[in-house]
Amino acid sequence: MKTQLTFSLIRFHWEDVLAFANELCTRLNLSVFRQQPNENFTPVGDDNGLFILPIKDRIWIPNSGVPAKLLPVKTKGTAGGKEWEVHGYPYEIL
View 1 (cartoon, helix red, strand yellow):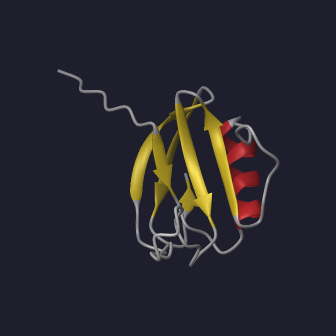
View 2: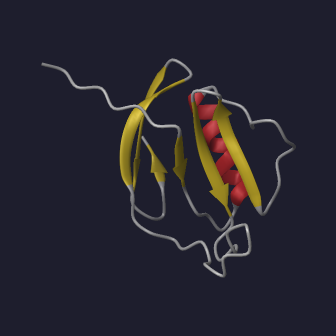
């Protein structure tokens, strides 16, 4: 039996948001979602799923006082017709 888990959002905190957004777009055939790329916050993906890329220590809106933190992550899936896997921090797209 194969189980499929879908997600609508995965958040990756990054020190160079634009570089990581560019890597996701290039390697997974995705695009920045409904805005211009921004060095502080850039969503990448589409209506079916987004990678949310805030800069490290960005305060979450609405002014929660909680900064974005760099935490280890391990996840895998399919996007833009390509399988992907992301590990740890620094994040590495496989």
